[in-house]
Image (cartoon, rainbow, N blue to C red):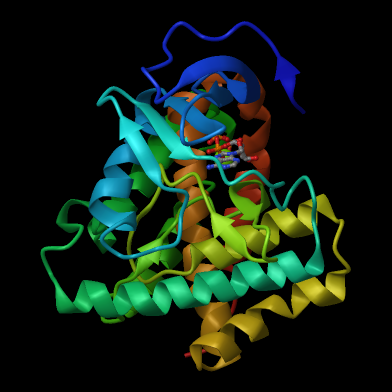
Length: 303
Ligand SMILES: Nc1ncnc2c1ncn2[C@@H]1O[C@H](COP(=O)(O)OP(=O)(O)OP(=O)(O)O)[C@@H](O)[C@H]1O
Ligand SMILES: [Mg+2]
């Protein structure tokens, strides 16, 4: 939904005269505006302000996304305090206009981005050094999730002990695999249709480096929840990914389960440490995230 409203006071200087703006997304920790310009090279730009943990998008652009050569809207300016100016790609996102072809294209984009990033990261160990995550880093997130969840919901004490055990074992197995890019919030609302029928990934504030396949897990989780694509087309996406990267579909499912545990622990950590204070409704997501973790932990391992 586009809401015409008064422009925010924190807008940076832009190349041209501002003639108007539309709030594209606004919630407690982030605001996204399309600012219309006159007399400049561009008719509009996207200006985004992230607060707290969401202020890290410029760093991800500089240290990860741009050096890895990933196709993204260009970062035109950053002010060092969480406000970034991005090229406006126009176009709907895949959540507002869900198509099976868009989901399939997103899977191809993910496959290509992971293959290319793995090569570049292997060739240059200094690249994205501060954004490479270890098994210990991911398990620390899980431990924080358990602690804050138990403080908030004593009835759930011990509920994610099994998932943490399984995650530990699975991450150890994955630790010898090549590192690659993890977007961290790879779902339809963060995928834009381009004019040529392609898909471009936006919203990089959660990105880091690790082999797990939580991105494909989340694309399917949210896509199935939205329920606007025929389930047979959604079900075929892991096999499509396997085909694109040239690997065994069973290995893809396995990586998705490990990645699903990582993504869900991270989402739960966010809800119980930050979300419940910033976005009170997020308290209602806790039970579902715990159920998901327990389901993922029960998944049979293929090797
Ligand atoms: N560069 C861009 N070009 C065109 N549209 C954009 C661009 N960046 C963002 N948008 C639009 O604004 C919406 C919100 O952007 P973004 O996902 O970056 O913000 P967010 O606050 O992190 O949102 P959310 O938390 O809901 O994911 C996107 O879904 C997309 O429709
Ligand atoms: Mg987003």
